[in-house]
Image (cartoon, rainbow over all chains, first blue to last red; front, top):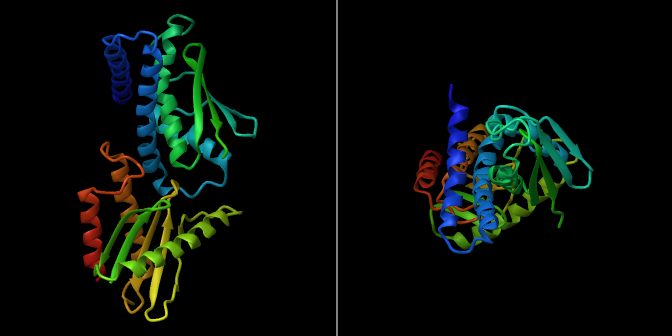
Length: 161
Length: 136
C-alpha cells in the first residue's frame, strides 16, 4: 500500500510551508533557525503522543539503554517501517543512532547532491525522538547530521539533572 | 463511593462520587503517591508488570482501599474505593485501569491538549462516568 508515501509527501509539504511562511517575513538571518525550531517543536509534540500509544502495552524499561533499544527497534519500525541500523553509546548519556536508508531522505539522492537541504528534513524527526524521550522521563538534546544520503545519524545527549 | 485521580506529580484529573469530603481524600491521594514513587524506584530487577496494587491504606474512622497504576510515561492513576465495597474484584480494578490508560492515550494524541495541563476532554469524562456507574 502507499501508506509510507502519504507521510513522506505530507512531511515535504510541511517543510515547504514552514519555509515559505518564514520567507514572507523580513528577517532573513533568523529564517533558518526559526524554521528548524518550528519543525522540531512539531516533531516533539507528535513524539509525545506516539510514545504514549506505543508503550501502552509494554513492560517498564529497565534502564536508559533498554529504552534506546526500544526506540531503535519498535518505535522506528512502526513509524519508518525499518529499524535503526546502528546504535552506539559511550555509556555516559550519549547515543548515536544511525539509519543507512532514512525513509524521509531516500527520494532526494544517493550521494552528495542536495546535501545542504537535508537538515530541514531532519528537524521534524529530531523533535520526534526528543518528544518520545521526554515523555519517557528523559530530557535530551537531539541533533542530526548527514554526510552521505540517504544515510544519517541522530545524536542524542541525555541531560542528567 | 469511588474516586479516580490521574496525576504526574500534581493532579491532572480528579473525579469522585459522592463529591463531598474531598479534602481528606487529597491527603490519601498524596500519601499513595509516595508509595507509588517508592515502588517505581525500587525496581532493581525488571518487573514485567507495570501495574502495582496497593491495598490497605486504613483510616481511623473509615476504611479505604487505594489502587495505583503507573505508565511508562510516569503518569499515575489512583483509584480510591470504600472498603465496604467488596463487589469490586482485582481484575475489575485492572480493567478499569486499562480503560483509564486507553482514554488517557487518546487525550495525549489530541492536538488541543498540552501535556501537563488539567484534563478537560469530554470523552475522557464520559469514560470515567461509565466506570463510576458500573462500580457503584
